[in-house]
Image (cartoon, rainbow, N blue to C red; front, side):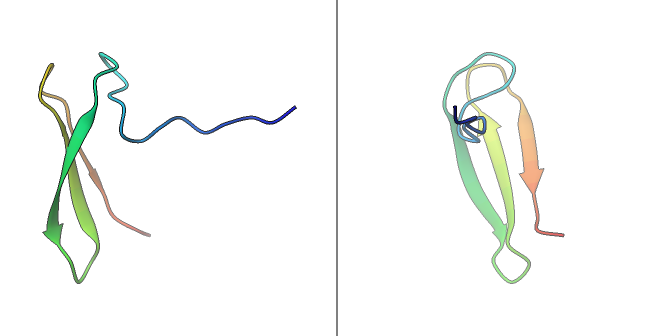
Length: 46
């Protein structure tokens, strides 16, 4: 049995698709935004 990771493109709050915007391409900083509920997430490698 395989476990699947949650899809990072789906909003954890409402389940809609999240869009992304690259904020800093040198640091690989990305902002994910849900247009339905307004949730904003940022991701950056450690």
